[in-house]
Amino acid sequence: MALFSLPRLMIEPVVRAALLEDLGLAGDVTSTAIIPVGHRSTVIMAARKQGVVAGLDAAQLAFELIDPKIVMTRHLEDGAAVNPGDTIATIEGSSRGLLTAERTALNFLGHLSGIASVTAGIVAAVQGTSASVVCTRKTTPGLRALEKYAVRAGGGMNHRFALHDAVLIKDNHVAIAGGVAKAIRRAKAGVGHMVKIEVEVDTLDQLREAMDVGVDAVLLDNMTPDQLREAVRIVAGRAITEASGGITPTTAAAVAASGVDLLSIGWITHSAPTLDIGLDFVSVKSA
Image (cartoon, rainbow, N blue to C red; front, side, top):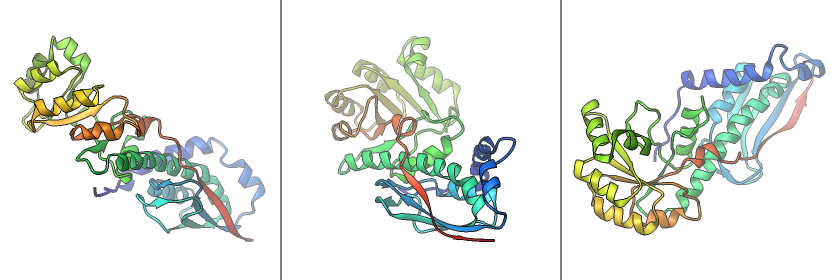
């Protein structure tokens, strides 16, 4: 799966807001008080745990927004696997600027690399099946584009980015509409021919009802592997099949083996642990 790039125009407001949150009204009072103007250093950004890198653009931008003269040389790119001790990048410039931007840069890089790392683990677990791993809208407010990018860096795919992307009829929509078939028919009448329609079903009877009306995709919620296999048989290639609900690295292989097309997993974005990445000074130069 090709890794798309996020334009600076999309990343910069998020990184700028994070820096402003850290700088507050007085800026980095510690570095300003201790480090002379003009003092320069070279640091390396290194992995302290095994994982997959993601978020280098955001990390680099954090340094550049603090001081445009800071130079970051990448030794790896997003999507690369790392082991403890691997050098990800070398950064040179103002010592004040390096320390001021350090935490914001590492926050982005660690968080996004954590998402890429757990995604890669699930992708590895389902290798040999036809299933793909996809994320959800369970993302940190304001960071959705970056977090979904990190999923791609880990070898996963993206589900819809927002409410306007496609119709996803969930259980509450079904309850309000008065049934699966009614909800699908209303959706078809309310959107254009270019908009895909997916419906969530909790039972095989609901699935049969959905297939009688016709949809582009079905979300098979909290079904066992046996139920998923039967669901795949019922659908018989007429729609994309997506398994969702409680999928873990331990259960992913069995879910994928049922024959579903997608494994939809919310926790890879909302609960992925940060990948430990550090910034270590290798040389300092006086002004």
